[in-house]
Structure formats: C-alpha cells, structure tokens
Amino acid sequence: MSETKKFLYVNRKAPYGTIYALESLEVVLIGAAFEQDVTLAFLDDGVFQLAKGQNTDGIGVKNFSPTFRALGDYDVTKLYVEQESLAERGLTQDDLQEIMYEDEDDDWEEKPSIRIVSRAEMADIMADQDVVLSF
Amino acid sequence: MSYQYNGHTVEHDEEGYITNLSDWTKELADVIAKAEEIEMNEEHWEVVNFLRSYYEEYQIAPAVRVLIKAVKKTMGPEKGNNKYMYELFPYGPAKQACKIAGLPKPTGCV
Image (cartoon, rainbow over all chains, first blue to last red; front, side):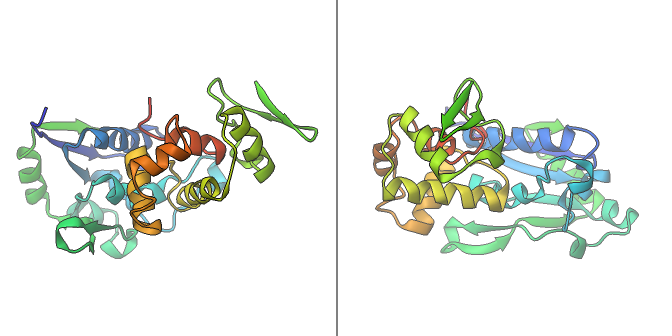
C-alpha cells in the first residue's frame, strides 16, 4: 500500500461551458485522499481556470475558482502553467490568482503553488509521470 | 423529504443534507442536529461556524482529514484531533458537522 505513484491532471479547457474543469478539480480532491504524488498542469484554454476575478453571476453556475486555493490543505502544491498558452491568450502571471501552500518541511512557510513553465519543460513534466489524466 | 420548524419547510436529500444552501438558519441547525441526535453546545457551534467560513472562502466542504488539520491550525491541537472531533460528532465530524452547517456533503466522502 505504501507505493506512491505520480499522478498528473492535465487541464486544457476553459472553466465554464463544459463540465471538464470542475470534474477535474473534484477528481483531484477525491484522489488527494489516497496520498499520491499529485501535480496539476494547465495549458491551452485551461489557463483561464486560474484567472483571478472570476464572476459567474451572469451564467448562473457556481464560481469554483476559490476552491483552487484550498488545494494546499489537500497537500496538492504543484500547479504548473504553460507560459506559451498564457502568452497566446494575452495573459501573464499577474492575471492569475495567487495560490499558496504552507510547507510542512520548512516551518510552515507560505510558498506559491503556481509555477510558470515553458512548453519544453511541460513535456518533461509529463514524461516524468506514472499516470496522466486528461481533462 | 424536508425539515419542519416554526412553520418553515426546508427540503433535504435522502441523507439529510439541505437542498438549497440559502435555506440555512441557526434554528434549522438545531433541528438538523436533533435529527442527528446531537445537542448543540458551544463546542459544536465552533466547528459548525468554522465550516461555514471555510465554505465561504473556498466554496468547498472539506474532507475530514483536511477539516481536522485546519481546526488544528486555527483552534489548536487540543481541538484539532480525531478524538475531540469524533466526541462532538460521533458519526463523522465532516459529514455530520457539514449537514448541520447546511453545506453539501464533503467532497471525497462516499
């Protein structure tokens, strides 16, 4: 039972309009109970999932973007965002919400969960996983 | 299925979680607690209020492991532990306290 696998959840779709983004987040939260090594990747329109200042009043669905900030409590602390996907959409890291976690091994110091990586680095991250789940 | 109190009718699902989160009131919490065979005291309210503010902030009802860790962080280790929390809510701190707090069933709870 102690065998830990590396799980990568790949998020490619915009947060609303389809159920993929919310379903992915729910699977991540449920999967976190199994104490695996979990990483999230955001690319293509998936980068919009982390955009700050989301307001869903006009479309009558729940704004679940605050839930990303709870991921640290679930020991999910690696959120990789692809630089090229941001740039292609005219976004920078400043357009993303700030997501922090407390590092248990470093006197509970607050550290950022989001890391911006290049397309080439993202390919390496994917190659390094045991399981890749695409949403 | 519904809870009845003071002339109010509040719909709930087959497990007792209320259908419409905005129906929640403190009086309703007492009614749900009674159905769960819990007499609400200050300690129970502390956890219920904590869960409501957690939901307010993160839009999620935390799993029991996360709840206990978060309680430990904000209220201290003498409250943030399994023994204390299960004494308050014998059928599961996250499940029962979320139900009383008018929140959905915790994500990751089956």
